[in-house]
Length: 111
Length: 116
Image (cartoon, rainbow over all chains, first blue to last red; front, side):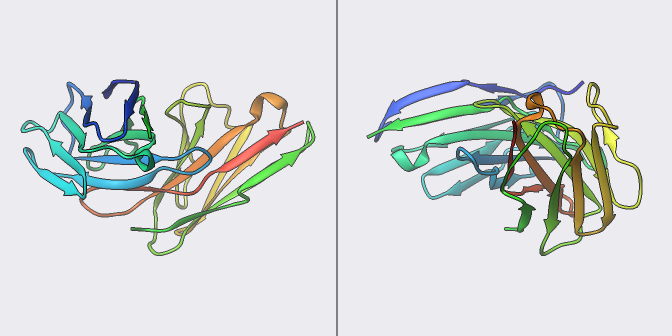
């Protein structure tokens, strides 16, 4: 069974602070996705990382894929209340069928 | 990004009735779709993998006779909750996997099922 450990599970911060969410596994993934989900809605894809060591930026969000493609991080700079939501990482393996999802990080950014 | 639709967005039904949820991939053909169930403030729980033209693969503990999945075309998968009971009340989400090298899944908006 492939596991993807996501931490922290809950995070409550003030507007303007920085934060990092981690996803770690002992398995190698061919790609890894990060999603953000708001209550009552489906997860929305933020980014897909494919190459070991890859760094992608999406405005104030920075995503990194570990060199060995076993782990990833999401860093948010100057968090805003609009960043509040459930962040999910998912690891995919080519031709493996289903993806492995982390348990999610519930982020609350207080104004 | 890719668009996946789900219908209905919410449904309320009486105990004992069956409910069908549709999941459509609107801008790409999806040979594989997934059905998830999500409890409040928790991550996604995979119920089954829906393969076009073949039987779905169910996760351990998911009753295949209770949750019927049909993937009759490359753009449509349906989940039917048969003889629904209050414990089946939940948020059901589908996803479609885009057939590229990244195997990225794109999610529908979810269906809130409430069984009275």
